Image (cartoon, rainbow, N blue to C red):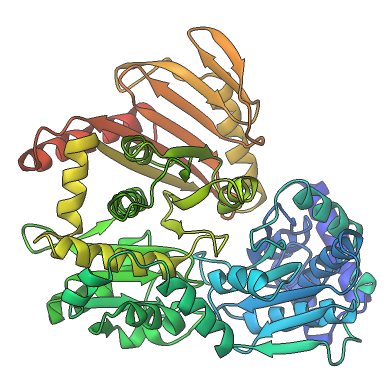
Length: 577
């Protein structure tokens, strides 16, 4: 790390030693100065960025870490912007998950808001992220915060800010909040105390209202009644889903929910998994073992803040197959639209939403029902923005993204693993009523619409040097884009940062979407390759989408192998393996 960066970090660390910080923090800073210069530099070389979604970072002392001081400064900046934006009484809601320090950060946030004169609704114990979104609308709040790092490793925590519609902040509020947060350069500018009596504890009454809302999304109660004994293994992976997923499933009528006791325990160290990420098959191992032991039909999981979900189902060989986010999202869209049509609820005024790196199968399904499909940037705040734009004019059915996030209806304006799993279980009962399971339905969809398959490679690059390497990867690909991928000519390039489309040498503007550091290549055979730095982790992600016709369900294994081989060739072509 260069000398100038080291010098900046040391100056900031000395400022913390001399400043108005608690003694434990000062002792830790002193320890790093004397024993771990690398960690000292990583902790202080920059200020933890309040991005368009809030904060997310490693917990610890320093300007580049999640701690009560960086959380307090972010909250003061948000409070200042809220006071500029709204007249009269301002109400906010705060939730938190199972991570280490989440209760502390939530209480700190509540106290700062209260000291600024706000009415603060603070959950009495840990709660899922979707409950925060729901609560903002339910209680008429102007904003909200949930303390969570979602599925990140245990050393992380985060802070997500929401607006009065229950969605994460978008333009112009996102950049305006960032500006206000950046004005708070020292904890002395934060009102940490002085809001006595303005913090109101909430809990079970919100849970009940939310569960009633989720129950109202049901489309096939008769199917559930016939298959309510379906065995469903569910794991919250030590997180908040343990509070409400079983209740939501029970509200639908399911009576045979099987727990994974070791993972029902809320624990921010996530002791039974390497990573609490439902995208990682290893995170579901205990649940899958329990399903084999009990002869279960389905396996379901949520991440620590229960906004994302995973589903596994038995195949023809009686082995459990973990559905990826593209598959589960496509299944849910197909089920929702099928039942809406059968119930006479489709009238040409409905729409669904996917993101630019999510499977094109969703668009094909929507088109077959004459339902509009919006394509937006990665992140549910962009999905919520489309819902807001269409409010009162069009009806949102459902939508999601490939990273295991989905939302049903518009009562929650963020991804919601609880309602999604409830509908997925109902879809499984609906399939069972036809002597099928979810995998059978998926294969039939592939025959009808084409076999779409996706792949993903995530490359982790931590710290300051990692950020530079990721930026360089994106710059190199912009400067020297591939001419062909897996033997097929690249015919379109979409650059969402420069907001330019290039096709057959003709450059046109990308309209209707904000700038985002995403590159997308489309080949002559329909293959789509996208790359983007993660907005929440020190990673760069490469997405692959390929397609083949599936003549019949009996050809599934053959075509599946062909698509797998094609994805591997793409990775090889791009030097990713």
